[in-house]
Length: 125
Length: 112
Image (tube, rainbow over all chains, first blue to last red; front, top):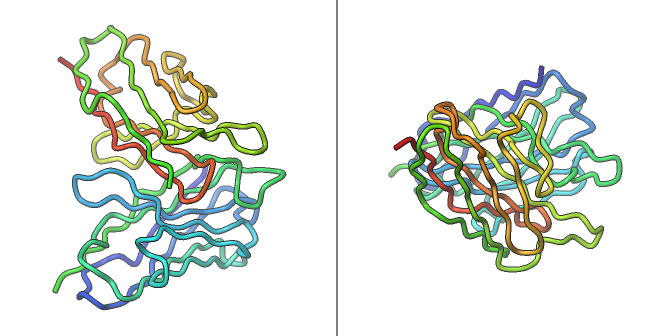
């Protein structure tokens, strides 16, 4: 069974930093691209960042570019999101999501087929 | 960025009756490889999103066959043939044809 377990969220001051983790199990982690998607309270889904299966290619939403860094440790089946210069508008539940397997593309097969429960982040002054 | 527009915002439905959700993209979602990376997600209250449909019309593993997807280019539809109580929640379309991935604003399906 696929499991994605996020951790590291919490309350942080404006301008602060935090690192989120997503521990993956139940599948071959190294074969899948991974993404972070966030959801502000009462709002819809917002894609944040994606990383290729091997960790070489990364993509970011403009709203977080230059402040957030996605990475992965394939030896530990873990995905990370380092978040710096945090703003109130970053307040959200952050979920990791697995990219569907692709034999061709290291960024996945074009959809997110499994999602974690999420970890909440509150940024406040 | 590709903007995804969903309608309606809310869909009150009688149990056993059909429901339909529309999703329109601001540009074609046809990828250079010929695929269209449009998917549909369901989010039940208090739960994470769950994949229902991928590449327009492919039902994901374990998804009941009352869910179906259709469309092409910039116009897509999710249909529930007979709404059940467990279908209550928010539904999102998502495009992954190009970065940044983008989502529709969501449609709330509720029982009348």
